Length: 307
Image (cartoon, rainbow, N blue to C red; front, side):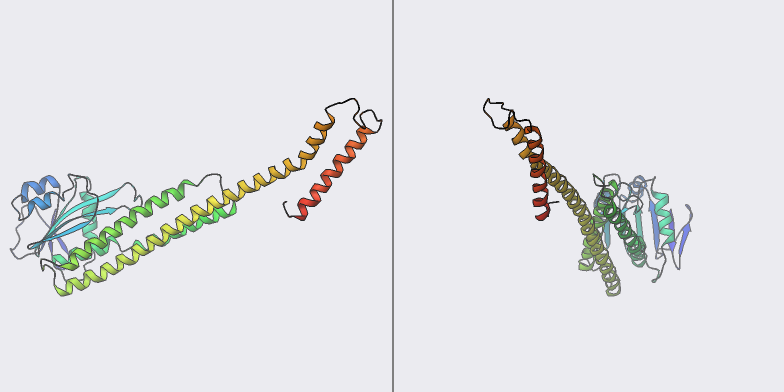
């Protein structure tokens, strides 16, 4: 799909012709890109950025007259699994976005929804596209924070025996988003270096503002990761406290009955000349001694605040 970039994106028919100086945005599959543009300068570099292979990170490479790179965009509904991997080739007049046939419709919808708030040039459209990718991310992270606070409240009310799967999934999603923002920061750092003098001073200023926004999002994800870790540690500490309470109760019960075990073992030896062995009141004496020992131990334990 080809678009003429003016005040908005205007679709160009398959047989349509454009002026040589027209700004064109093109969305194509890897196979079509290889077939149509194998003679482009630095095509070997573009070929390494095509989604025919596993794309794992966002990057930008500045070469003579163009910028080549990749965008790996997580789906915020399922960041751990569903990602949009896009290769791009950008000159001053032409932007080629390459994605698999399966994901091209989604990429097309995204491109058509980009608000063109800056002058309609290829570089401005690309920067607007990057802004569009993160426009709702702060709200997304704030909702993520609410999810974590709900999990924390549940754990405080009644801690389960094992960590809820939701907190584990949340940590994985945060790891993906954290890595995504870090990659975008690296990509914008390369663009700001402007080694091939591709970007104008105005465009570098826009990239700098975008980079600052990414930096704040990255800091927010770092904070949320620490929050998730604190929730996990809180849950573990609750389990430790519960286990310690159980062990304390068992210890107290064992200590209470240990003197009685000693007493019954002592008088269970049945030696012939043992005192009270044939006394008619021996059984009652042992009962009273046992009760006195237990009461004395309970008094001592309560004094020491052991239970």
